[in-house]
Image (tube, rainbow, N blue to C red):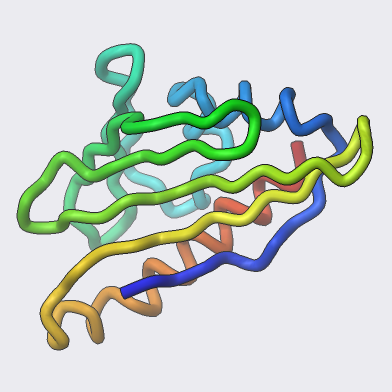
Length: 130
């Protein structure tokens, strides 16, 4: 299952946005309002929980400065990646898109598609407000 957020405009340079997303502690600032739990674990991972959802642990897997950040789930039951793509528009503006990729059985995919789509859309909208 591949889901993409809308591409949003951010009034910050590509490097500033990349550096913000690379610091996993900053994800707390862009989480949806219905977050029940957020905790930074090591330098490169965090756990979060939204209302009605299980606790999810994400770990920084890969970075390509200054345009790509890949976070991956640490659970075998819910294996997925969340990729942040940061494009330079001008020196002071960038565009960000989030891409969710995971392999799920059709029943699971049907259950989580809308909540995940809403989640990544909210994250990208909150990034645009930075």
